[in-house]
Image (tube, rainbow, N blue to C red):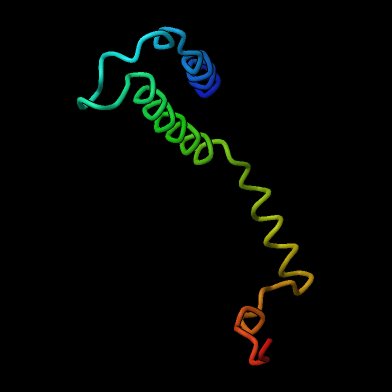
Length: 88
C-alpha cells in the first residue's frame, strides 16, 4: 500500500504547473528552477524504482528461469563471447 501511495505521489508531483511561467529563482545562480525540479524529480523517481524492484520483484521468476536454463543446458559458454580469429 505504501508503494502505491509513493507512486501516486510522484505521479502527481510530476505535473509541476507551479514552475511553468517563471524561470526564477535560479538554483546555484544559473539553473532555472523548473529544470532543477525535474532533475530532483528524476533522482526521486529512480530511488523509488530501486526500492520497488528490491522489495516487490517476484523472486520466483528468477529461480524458475535459472532452473529452466540449467535443465535444458542453456548455460552460457565463455567461448561464445570471445572474439573470433577470422578477419573481416
